[in-house]
Each structure stands twice: as C-alpha cells, then as structure tokens.
Image (cartoon, rainbow, N blue to C red; front, side, top):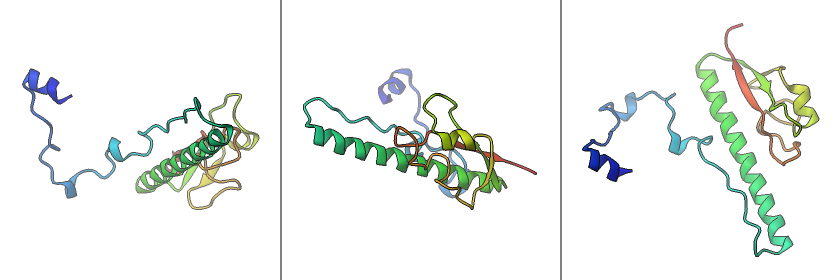
Length: 140
C-alpha cells in the first residue's frame, strides 16, 4: 500500500501529532483488536484422521479464546461508558443451541457469569464455539 501513496504523492499518517498518552483509549486499533483477526480453518488435505481431529480441537480452542477476548474488550468498553448490564443477543439461525436461544434478549450483569458462560464464551454450542454477543445496556 505504501507504493500507492508514493505514486499519488501522499504522506504517511503518523497518528495526527497526538502523543500516545493523550489518544482516545476507546479508539479502535485494528491490529490489536481481537475481533479484527480471523481464525483460519485447518487444512484437511494430506492429513490423517488423527491430525484432522487434533487440528479441529486447536481451531475450536482458538475460536473460544477469540470469543472470550471480544467479550472482555466489550465489557471493558461498556463499563467505561457506565453500563452495568448487557442484553444477550444470539444469531437466531438454525445453528443456535437451545441455551443461547433461551438466553436471547435476556438481561445479565457484566460481573455475574450466567450458567454456561457469557455470550461468545460458551462451549455448549454445536460448532464448539458460541457466536452470540453481549449488547451493552446504558441507563436504567
């Protein structure tokens, strides 16, 4: 991408001249944002069934770690904004597990973990990772 900037005569952005200590901590920093990275499905060609099974276990553990990281990021952001509760949001498709479907739309506290875990952190879902998310509730 730098070559395009050189051709067009554009200068590289350096952070706007604002010292790092004064930058907005809520600003999205994509390289460090857990939601910006994609967990790649493991390749299956040329592998034994045991290797495929081990790769799938690793893949699901990476998805679960990503879900936990996203939940922690969202919890920290919501608490800075003054939220004490969140509304559980499920994907509402045919792959949603019964627990997530039951929790969809219900209010939960950021501090108290519901049975089975917070949204995005559950291991009960059919794919091995939860696709639900927490929608912060502001105000009363």
